[in-house]
Length: 131
Ligand SMILES: *[C@@H]1O[C@H](CO)[C@@H](O)[C@H](O)[C@H]1NC(C)=O
Image (tube, rainbow, N blue to C red; front, side, top):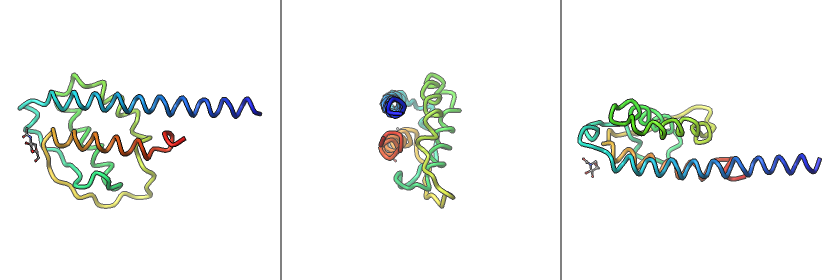
C-alpha cells in the first residue's frame, strides 16, 4: 500500500516536472518564432483576445495558433505546434460552456507575445503542475 502511494506520488512528480520542462521548451520556441517573423507573415492578421486572462478566450487562442500553424512560413516550427497540441488538454480550463471573447485582429508578433503570456499563465493554473 505504502509502495503504491509512493509510486503514485513519484509518477505525479515526474509528470509535473516533464510538463514544466515542456512549457519552458514551448516558450523558447515561441521566442525564436517571434524573432523570425518576416514581412511575409507580418501581413497575417490573427484574431487575438483583448484580455488574455479571459477563460472564455481559450478557443480563440487555439484557433489563432492553428492559423499560424497553417502559414507556410511556419513550417520550420512544426515541432512547436506538435508540442503545443500535446499540452492543449492541460492548458484547457474545465468550462461547462465558453462565453463571449472580445478580440481584435493583430499582427503575428503581437499574437505570439500574447500566446506566450497565455502559456505561462495557463501552466501556473494547471492542475498537474500544482501537484
Ligand atoms: C504589430 O502590432 C503592434 C501593436 O499594434 C505594433 O506595435 C508593431 O509595430 C507591429 N509590428 C509590425 C512588425 O508591424
